[in-house]
Length: 521
Image 1 (cartoon, rainbow, N blue to C red):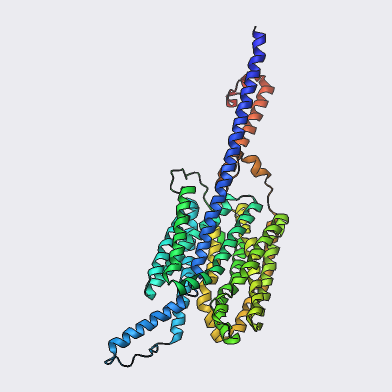
Image 2 (tube, helix red, strand yellow):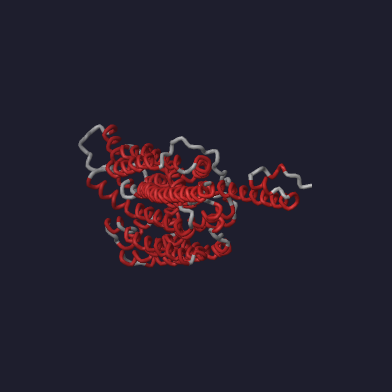
């Protein structure tokens, strides 16, 4: 009877084990699908935040000069009414202070966002490394919402300046945490490049669509409407973040790896080369935006609509550059440095040809070349920053993308203030030649990244050490745990093998007794 029951019991155990394995496999498949769906939602939330930030940066381009002029005329009229003994002569009010002072005020207002962003980024990067990516992203969206509402109803220069600076504070948290979150969620290099490419497309669209968007709404509806629309987008994105990610849900953070301090990342020569390339390639765009409209008006008699739509055609080559770089990186990932170097050469050549353009149609070509080159550099080098952290530091990305944001902020903080002064002192042609030469000369520095790209590790170790799909922020912990467990398992196996050989206690070994009780003497 016992001999008949044993096969049945064995068969039953096998069936139960098979059912359990099948159920676990089904649960794992469901979890992977859910995780993939959540990653796409997170990517959408981050892309909207980046789109919003760049809309806020550029939407004031057609609004602020005219609005500050109207405030000045209003102040002049009010001063004239208060000081005049007669109201009979009020036909034309002329300014009592130089227009150059007004230009400087506009330049400082434009640059204040990038300046504060530049100052806050070292702190925000460290904060992001400590608490994760979701809470700083939410903080950034809240600050951007409040600052945009203030901007909508501001009626004097001081309030505009405060609102603009607050936008920089929100951007320092939202931009850095958003890009870092993408790098963390998309750990495979091909997926990471594709996701960051999508984010860059949103950034480009926000920057290039904002001036016509702001100009049209400002002309036909009023100053408040563009900012209220953007504030509404920020509010909706923040609500979606609360629903999808639940940043304030109770969860343990003590197991998070400690990221490399930002000052150590800054002195890493490879990261420094990438940061320098990001700054250099964005200088032509940052310096041309505040100066090209006046140059077009004086040299080619450009109309208002031409000056307003100067950069819009460049959106399409920028997206093309992102798409092309993602495809090339997927097939030839070891040449990311080369794509960036080619992009810098294209930027340099395009920048040098801008002053030679005689009409609006000719001007579109080099501007499209500049944006195409920037797309190559950004799309190739932003994923490289995450790779450098993975290879040389701890896989926590807040500080390294704070460095990237600092690189952009340097260019856009200097542009509105310095570019006009350079044009006044040396000329528009010399400005463009200098920017073009800087890009061409910097391109060979990216050769330093060639060896880093060849050091790309295979994914076999990660796949072996991690039981489930990797989560970038926690990879370090899990890999170390698996390594330690694997090492302990090998040590125990060796101990058991020696014990069986010397003392023949195979029964104890099969029953699971601790090998530390055995005497190896």
